[in-house]
Length: 373
Image 1 (cartoon, rainbow, N blue to C red):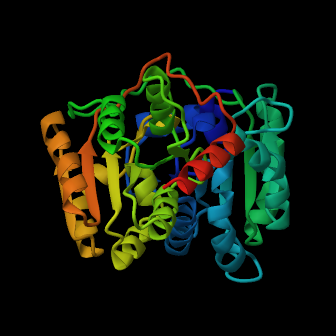
Image 2 (image 1 turned 60 degrees about the vertical axis):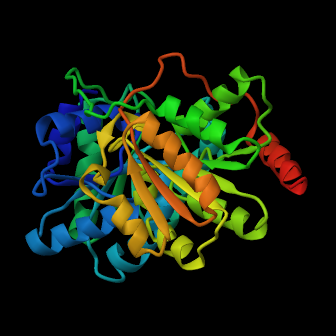
Image 3 (image 1 turned 30 degrees about the horizontal axis):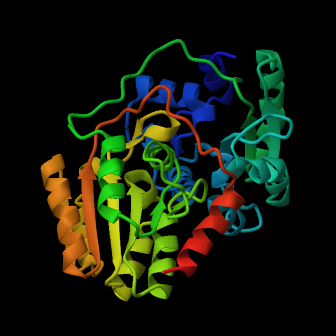
């Protein structure tokens, strides 16, 4: 189905979301049509943020907003859906558009498998009526589903369209780029070289995939690295947990700007605990690149100032490899909690692979490695 027809049937003119590759057609249409426009389209930090923003929109306008997200974000909406939007509380109607990663019977990455199994069940448990949209869904079928949803929305209930792989299409093109010179894969390579035999916790998405391939190319095993293939925004907290319990060994966290934004409160907890052995590197390309390239707000904020305000004793931003290498070397010698923001371009190799080990294999090897430290 053309995304234009999908939007027409929904009849909404305000969208808040966190991008998803399954919703690439919708995301690109929104960027081509509205860009980032506070009256029509906002990319929020996380899905709960989207739900609350949508609630404010409804309170101010009386109209029904759309919240779009990958199904991994259902966990982030449970609290606002249950205690804010629900018709037993404030009865705020929202149309959720959910990308169905890991749909049963459709091959996907391991972090999506269980989430895919419970996607519709979680919506049912939250009393959110859903309709699955596939490649074969016609405009008339979607319109009929929307007609069935309207009385529910009028009663202050929430509804959801669950989008199967390839269900929506968009013929337009959107260019996602920035002026930064450093390439993320090379940034990861420099971090891995600086870390040596220190353990690394890397965030979900392409950074972990690149770290895996760098180890393979170097003839190294993967035991030093915990690849956080899911749970976006939590790599820094995982790294904190490791660092606090391995105080005699430096721990590195390779983070992304979208992930850091998603659960930025983690930085306050890290700063309050001040683990002297943690180096937190945020690779900032101002984009949700792994799911298509839509922008984050990270290019408009001062991550260094935020880190310092959260209690990081040392924080620095770099935009060249010479400056990056100097910052990495300084972090190793300084012996205090450090944040390094590495400003990166948008883009990755077309032939970038995925980890060939399972998530359980990764966990077991990493835990065995930590026992030796």
